[in-house]
Length: 114
Length: 111
Image 1: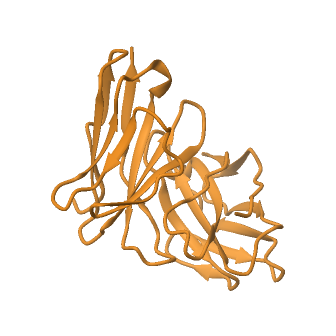
Image 2: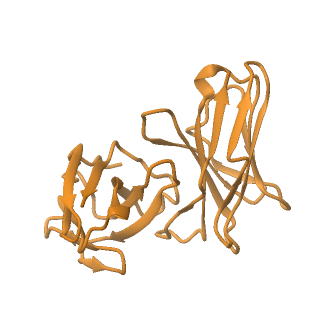
């Protein structure tokens, strides 16, 4: 499967724990984007990364959230000290980086905070 | 970025064409019109995009008015698997992957 791979697909955490979501982009893609979809709401852009660089993090909450895309390995979205409001579907997308290139989305990681 | 307006929902009979309208009256010259869809609980799927000319691919056709203030996505022969939320998005050249998803149109294809 050469698509965008996200894991875990489902994650349950208790309040105060940490959540780590992983995303492997499509083969040949070096641009990764994270989006969040709260229950019954639309998708919201969070962050845009290229290898080892954060390009745009204007949609990231200021506290507890961080993202990285290391030289080797998948992109990681990390949420520290989770709260119930963090319960959502987190989607990763990748692109080739062309100015009008389409985004290819993964199937998402669904975080539930108890 | 320009905003888009879409109907909240629409029904379509299986086998018939589905015509999904989108208004983007504040679109500027360097902004493209993109369509994505999201089938329940899945990741969004790219459908088509265009600047000012009509476009067609294996999934759909995109008709953009001459003044570019509105567009229509056409699914030529809707199937039950086309039931999804369809998003019309205006994307400036150079905005990379920062897409502004609105509420979209919930399309239900009925037998």
